[in-house]
Image (spheres, rainbow, N blue to C red):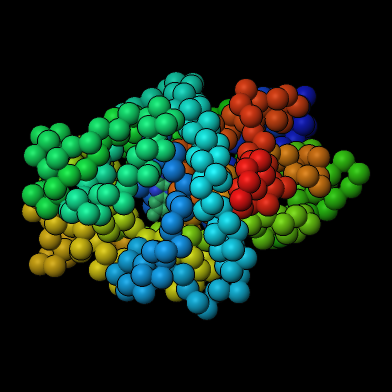
Amino acid sequence: MSQQASAAGRAFVIGGGIVGVCSAYALQLNGFATTLIEKGVPGHAASFGNSASIGLASVPPLGMPGMMRTLPRMLADPNHALVIRLRHLPQTLPWLMRFRRALAPARVDAIAAARAALLSHAGTAYESLLAEIGRTELIRTTGLILAYESRNSFAGARAGLALRRRHGIEVRELDGPALRDLEPAISERAVCGVHFPIVQTVTNPLDLTEAILGAFRARGGRVLCETVRGFETGPAGVSRIITDAARHECDLVVLAAGAWSGALARMLGERVSIVAERGYHIMIPAAPRMPAIPLVSGEHNVSISTLTTGLRMTTMAELTAIEAPADHARALRIFRAAAPLIRGLDLDTTSPWASRWVGARPSTPDSLPVIGRSPRHRNVIHAFGHGHLGVTFGAVTGAVVGTLARGETPNLDITPYRPDRRFDGSHLGTAR
Ligand SMILES: Cc1cc2nc3c(=O)[nH]c(=O)nc-3n(C[C@H](O)[C@H](O)[C@H](O)COP(=O)(O)OP(=O)(O)OC[C@H]3O[C@@H](n4cnc5c(N)ncnc54)[C@H](O)[C@@H]3O)c2cc1C
């Protein structure tokens, strides 16, 4: 099957999550006849169930120096949010080795700088995109609160706060009463915390993806419900995309398949380091108090945010296979422990959750996304591996994809995100 060629050519985006949808829209703006291929329903994988945060203060990477010392304790605790499934250790071990190397202090600093650089474009990229499609109401500047139940555990957050401050992020430290003045839904449990005023929140992540997808369709974009199974290559790169339904002739391919991207990259003869880092959520449509400012429990690693559909609690970083059986029971234990941070919310005495969900973050060991031209195929652009920040980085990634597709240089240095790196922070030019 072939699509009518436009002046720029026929572009195919694989993956209908927030990153794929933003990329498809940007390609269309740049004159490509663009097709989005999605094996399920667009916007219903990781981009559906996340915490809805445009995390403009999320400078620190997932792993901080010294983490190896606390890791055994975290992994032994059945109620901890971090889980490494031993059954899938053969797949995750190489990733974990790179993750460990990326914890060296100089590498953490360099990774944080690379995250800060991309974050500095993330908010403005959404502003332009949402203004263009007339949906600016989908993202609001709410700020974010990181709340602690003990000053001891708050001390553990110090290094991350210092890193943020070094990159110019405003960090307001508050005691318990000041937290409650700011957000009255916070209970007496919180003794101290921090407020990041810069953070924004999506009113509902699915609405965001669907709004951009709607604009893409309205401009003539095509969406196919097919599963990509392979590629045919020629002298110019990928010549055809093979799906379960057809063979599509193409001039440009964008790989934006989230946690599935590693397997597709392997089909292209490329090795990227990416694992499924699964997270869980529950929705509570009628919580006694709905916080206007989203908050994160520092002790339990639970995010709590108010969406248009109710209160959403998210947690867990579970390294496992994408399709492994879900452990909702563990997630619920963690939600129960964090719930008392909100006044009147008690998951022990009531069962107020309407739905529960599990989804896979596409995570790299160096906490940086993979954005850039494929080293092997000139007409393939990679746009995946956004880990905890895929919603945040959706619009800026799309804008970079559009610029690369035009054959131009983006207005930010994308070498930190290049696909052919070693994924342990060593490509950032730091010593061990
Ligand atoms: C609990 C949780 C909380 C989070 N909170 C936040 C947050 O607050 N802020 C933030 O910025 N990020 C957050 N994230 C991360 C964010 O959700 C992800 O990084 C982001 O959604 C990834 O988007 P994506 O488009 O790359 O992938 P996805 O949304 O997973 O989309 C990939 C798509 O590709 C499709 N696909 C895969 N293989 C194929 C194939 N062979 N053929 C066709 N289609 C295919 C899939 O069906 C899927 O729809 C959170 C994640 C979780 C799990």
